[in-house]
Image (cartoon, rainbow, N blue to C red; front, top):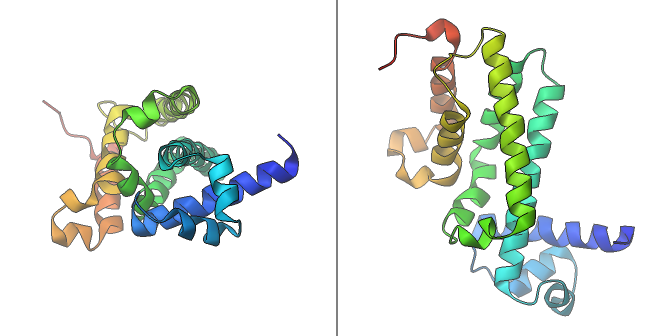
Length: 191
């Protein structure tokens, strides 16, 4: 893909992600095109229907998770700090709005796509490596696994409406409390 075409695609996907985070998956295509600074014809040439656009946003989202994980790890003095910073970043309500909107889309929209499946698998493998490294360094409880981190993110980023109101009003506080409970120093025998 030519560099200008790639920039145009990224501009559309960024705008679409923002609009869908704000208005949901049924946001008007015209609004997405306007926000991206392209004509609606350009949007439809790139994505022939809403389903194709939503699937591409899923790919875009999982790639952004992988990039954020890499960034958190590179800027951290140790694995625990990188993991902690990434989870807090991913659980931010502003970022979670897109995850929440995408959570209502049938899972097959994403999982049946090779690009999404591959990017998600790579992201989960890198997250798993970070979890194991934090455990090896003695910072993360040994009974906490990658699935626990993903479940925590799913709750705070994808399904915040399921949280009690007092938690939903201050998600970062409660996310940090939960993360602190995952520290090795906080471990108590688990059932």
